[in-house]
Amino acid sequence: MKKLLQEFREIVRGGAMHILSGSILVKAITMISSILIARFVDKNDYAYYTYVNNFYQYISLLDGLGLGTALLIFCNVNMTPEKKKAYFNFALRLGAGIQLLAAAGLCIAVAFIPLPFPQAKKYIYLQVLLPAISFVSHMLMMQARVDQKNKIYSFTGVIRAIVVLVVGTTLVWFLDVYGIIASHYLSCIVGICFVALFFKKFLFSTNAEVLDREEKKKYIKTGISLIIASFFSSMMPTNETFLVNNIIQDEVVIANFKIAGLFPQQLLLITGALMTYYFPVISAIKDPAKQWSKIKKIGAINFVIVIFVAGIGALLTPFVIRLLYGTKYVDAIPLTYAHWLMRTVNAAIRMVPMNLLPAVGFLKFNSFTAMVSCITQTILDYILISLFGVTGAVYGAVIVYLLSAAVTWWYIRHVLKKRIREEKKYPQTNE
Image (cartoon, rainbow, N blue to C red; front, side, top):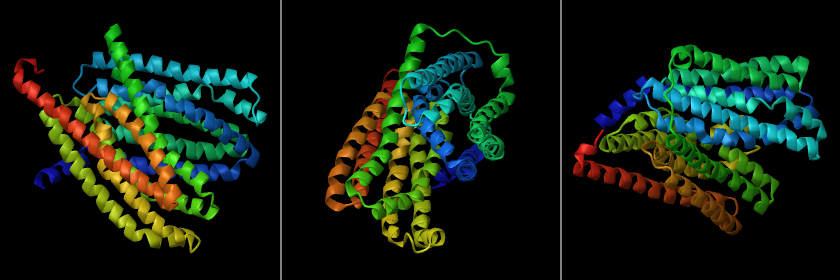
């Protein structure tokens, strides 16, 4: 308990609370801006903009082949600035180029392919540079994480959200949807300038080393592995909703399922903030014994915090639902408890090893596990929803989350214990 309390104090001092509060603020500001913008923009134009955004969401999933996130694995606070600059430059050029090519490909495609809403084409063309500029901002934020500048990272996200809120809601009065698009461009540019202020020496004075072909190849493979794992993990909650919508086919049940999941899914913010903070920390540790010790502490702290918050959330569920929705969604309360269980299992047990396994250098297992979990959950959900109704989706998710958590915890322990044995056997190989 003493060690856990010490670790918790380290989390607070290290900036994890800034990451969490920043994530909550970004989510709240984004929600407010989306509500205000939807109210002020012409309904038809807003529908076209939403339609276009769906295309660009697929491009954003590319994330420059995952090269931004891969920076956290290849670089750490102890690496020489010249080496970090080499990986940063490589990822920035290639990642931004991929995002730009994907957006340009979309523009070329829609120029020749008829769309259900031809009026939306102009909004596709206007956003062609946004994925690349957004990736540049993302890369700078990843560099802040590499150097464990968590306050800069969280503040940048909040500032970008505020720009969209203030500028977006102002410009829509005069420019309609064009104002929203302009606010997103400005948000990225402000984010880039803000982070660049703190990394002037790194960006403009540090001379980058030259990466050899093997280093580049390994970096790209890492990014692709991260993208695969992220893609299948992101699909899991989407599949839940899709199956409930199409198997149940009951408007009341579908609405209840949506409302029931709103608050429990916020647990992911807590674990997500801890993983954002700890990923570069674990990546910087070279001693496998220290890595395993640290990961166990992280798992224990995350478990305690998530269980505590989930318990309070479950107790407050009837009050919060009645306060926000009146008696309209009282019948969603029992389903909300089931969602608390499902999201607690995921956030408290599964997310830690799944997120930290790449930090210790093992990516293929994560990609494979994410793919198998996604397929298994889809099959289980289909069967269990057909048998038990909407709660079947919860049963299916809990089963898959528990199994994948157990397997991933076993694997991360297995590989680190193996490294520890190897280092004891061949101490001369230690760095």
